[in-house]
Image (cartoon, rainbow, N blue to C red; front, side, top):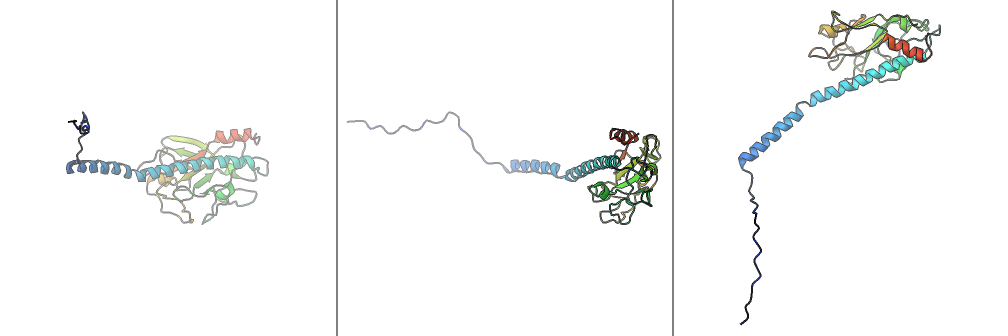
Length: 241
């Protein structure tokens, strides 16, 4: 009688994979880790936005400095010497420089940046206008500046100016930073005045300014056109001596 063989049973794998579900404790631990990770991502978002805004404003200020130097290189006063633009002293600002005579001196040595004349944007990253001050001897369109012209502004490490950062500055531009104290808004309205002594120094319309690392009370960003840079660029452009 023939023997009928059934199909062989499949071999049992040598290694068995154990499958089981997560326990409630393990799920709770995973959720806690995810929550901590999300908290670590979400909390610095405002700080990241401020960093980006400061970087954007720093780039804009660098463009302003180049535009001011370019303006001087492309404009000649009545005596053939270069000159810098005047501030926009209108209220509300219109982005156009103001002179008491044409050609002649500025109506005021400090105001907002004449962004229209420079072909630049009018605001910083917080939608406030840039403050601009220029030395009278560098901004007269009747008699321009020469090699030995001296700027009258000083940048300091604090309002007492115990340490000078830069002297004989011909032109200076600043953003009043995230808090906007002392600035003109994009609509031309004057913002609240600063309460911090260093920020107040940057809004009191004199020849001294504070430039330092931002802290809890001070967030202004300040740049200037160095005298040596301006003069050397005018020599290179054939505008001086």
